[in-house]
Image 1: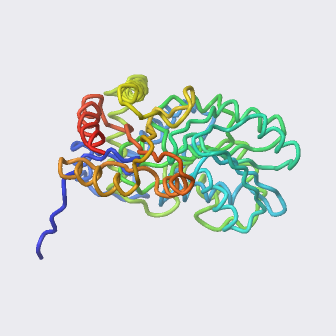
Image 2 (image 1 turned 90 degrees about the vertical axis):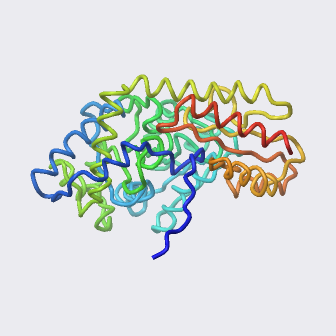
Image 3 (image 1 turned 120 degrees about the vertical axis):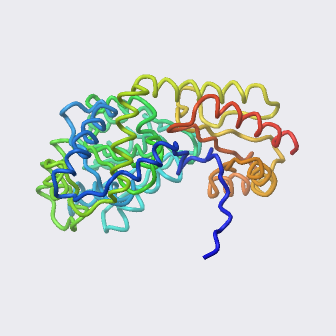
Length: 379
């Protein structure tokens, strides 16, 4: 069999993300039985380190869902929105719509409250909608991957609780890159995944399930099998997965989480992400005609979205900037496709995204920004 010419690219997209060589090598650790004592050697520290990274304490039970963040999101919908109940989804971008689309696909009664691209949740508008609709469950995105907007999770959860609704939070692109202080967040269930700020391959959705959510799920019917969080919790309490996991990814996850918690240090990791956001902000200030897309105070520490000057086209970003950077060994993100198409159709300035999550370092980011700047100045 002839070998394809796979390019060794440094990924500065918003997921999947760069994986360190030592994390890749951890895939070669021995295979194991997922119902054997060898499983505990991996899964006990994985779940303990997930709790530490989330600041969850004993308040939430970590569950690994086979699949992706979407798998864990669907489980939260199937298990926590009962027949006859209303879900309000609050969206600030394309990925914010995802929770709503999952709910509709599962036959749930749902409404989608949308805010303009690049804007955070408007609390006054949300409060009016909560008072009007009186939903039993509210879902929203902590960190919007399409726009680089980070919502104030605690404030949003507190407002939802004020109206006696249950908050479900999508934290897929921020978990592992920022202090979410989950124990004090107010979320009933927090959902994330392996392939973003944890700097692992895709393969697991991760759900942090509160006791409140566990108790409600026990009263909900038609939850399916893999989407039944009570079934999942039965195995999670034994430090297992419901069905056979990707053992290679478990080995890598065991290694990576131990390295994050005990080598890099959680606070150092979060500070590194904050520093890289500041690097992009400073870089943008030095470029004529470029601006940050998200408002100050609501900018993600894991990815940045930058507005290009008027006249720059999506075609230029994809065919010129992206391909020139590919030749230099980088995979560039020319902006979320649906968002840029909408902006271009409205005559608005298009955007690019810069992923600085997971194990990207400030030195790596500095080199990339220098290469990116050279290409952007050619436009």
